[in-house]
Image 1 (cartoon, rainbow, N blue to C red):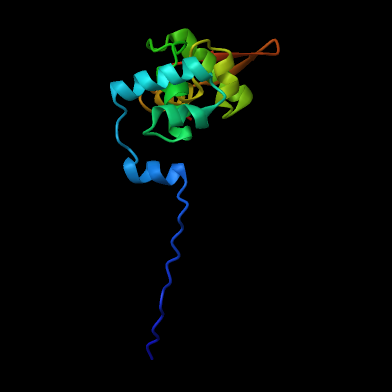
Image 2 (image 1 turned 30 degrees about the vertical axis):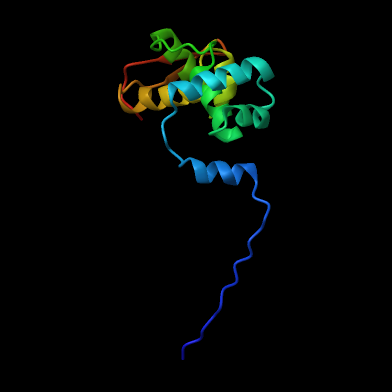
Length: 150
């Protein structure tokens, strides 16, 4: 037995700005230098709390995309140098004290984003085979590196 169903498409005359942006720009397209410049100018003018307004000034990206790009990639305060061995130890130590609270861990490493710290932690464990073992030492934790992964 076959049933036929008719689908009714309700069209709205009101299309949100977000929907317009989705139609204009496909997700996953790399940011251009011009978009980065526009984003920096918008953040300079409006600050880091008004992402809806920032997105309107950029014009081609959503508020979420603008915030993510600024916070994780083009903020002038981001330290983009390679991680040091000392920073690796802090990351391992903090992870075993705080868990996956990457933002909290980022507070102890100036200029590093929560995302870069999370990615570095994954790299430490997977690619470099550095273990983050603990040895209790007068109520402090010491990180021992270079051992096998558990």
